[in-house]
Length: 123
Image 1: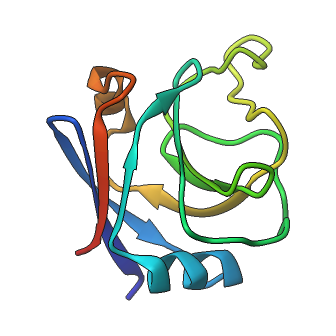
Image 2 (image 1 turned 120 degrees about the vertical axis):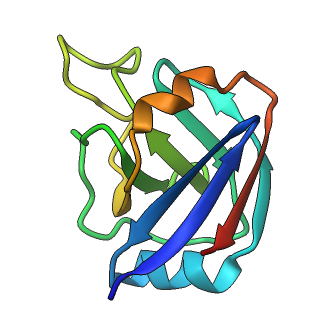
């Protein structure tokens, strides 16, 4: 069974599964994590206390993917196009380590506002 985390952002709460990658292991060990939401198109990102290199980096992701952005030590939640996207693709600012996926409908993150608090906890 995959490890699960709960993501609370503003008034939203979803569950996600994380993979068996070095990135996921480091984030799992850092949980609980608290942050403040930054928005970049349909992406939420916030700095976390994890410092990792690129691991199987992806430049195009899917809605609901959880990514770690090494350039900013950030936890990223993707739920739609970003300013870098072409058409309907979802493109991070630069390659990210995709380490998990939201189980619930990621579109709920459209309700999150810049500056909302975010809490990541083990499910």
